[in-house]
Image (tube, rainbow, N blue to C red; front, side, top):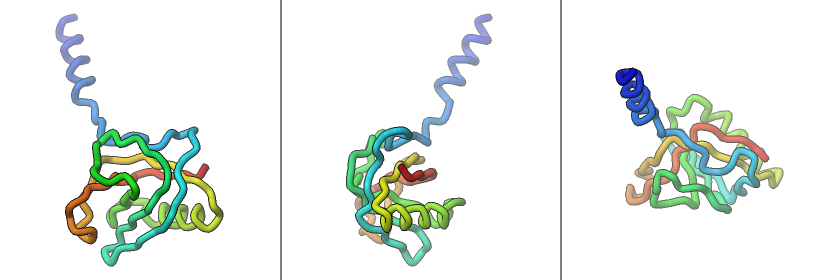
Length: 117
């Protein structure tokens, strides 16, 4: 029994916390002010509204979609749709990333899931 409890405790401690909601799934979301596509294929989305900064990123007025994200093109399409239609969006992130384009001094939330409200 003691070994089971130890294993359970280790599982709870080691369970990844690298992905989390930075806007509530059923909340109001944030509005998109502008979308910036980098030469590398990455996307920066400037937002207006509050996010939950669980990773303590230094910059929270924009989020980042890396060029290697599997659904990058779909998230970019969704961002442009939301911007054009005035809809609000929500994000789920996987940590912070320093974007070299912006001088490499601010880390921003990395988006791995996105939805329209």
